[in-house]
Length: 193
Ligand SMILES: [Zn+2]
Image 1 (tube, rainbow, N blue to C red):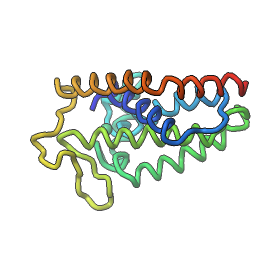
Image 2: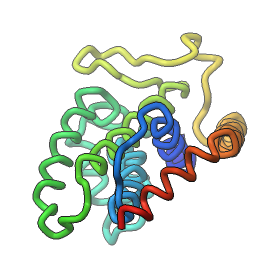
Image 3: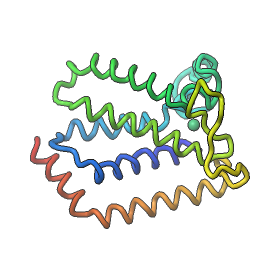
Image 4: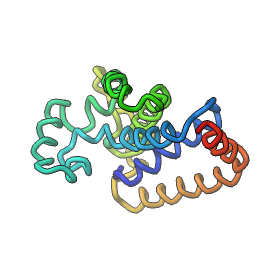
């Protein structure tokens, strides 16, 4: 899937979870940092390919991309598995604990979860593509949905664009259907500051 679809999927997953698991008090700083973490989580698995947007936007990014890609076992390997989610989950938690003194008002637990939701949404979306995802590494089997490879999506092709529009439509419906709930979350954020 393209980075654009992953970005949308990550924030959609976060939004859907907010309805299922209502969070308690959350301040504005946490909400903003959590959104950024969610978007970073949504594209993190693709750091295993030198053509990823992250590497494009960094000076000599392609060079670093190649090194990181190789150390992660190549494209759609470690970073696209539950083992990778656990590894990056641990590393991101350490990083957040480390920078917490710089932003003491941010509720890092929520930020961490937003990152993990972004990462998991990436794996779910890539499962819909022809290449599939090795969810259960070190078991080297790539899982895909639907099971018939022919019916899955080719990255960047028209079906992915249609899927992007479908997710967008779900988001619009979701915001309309849960308007009061979303309003309550916003009020809670404002009241907490
Ligand atoms: Zn991917």
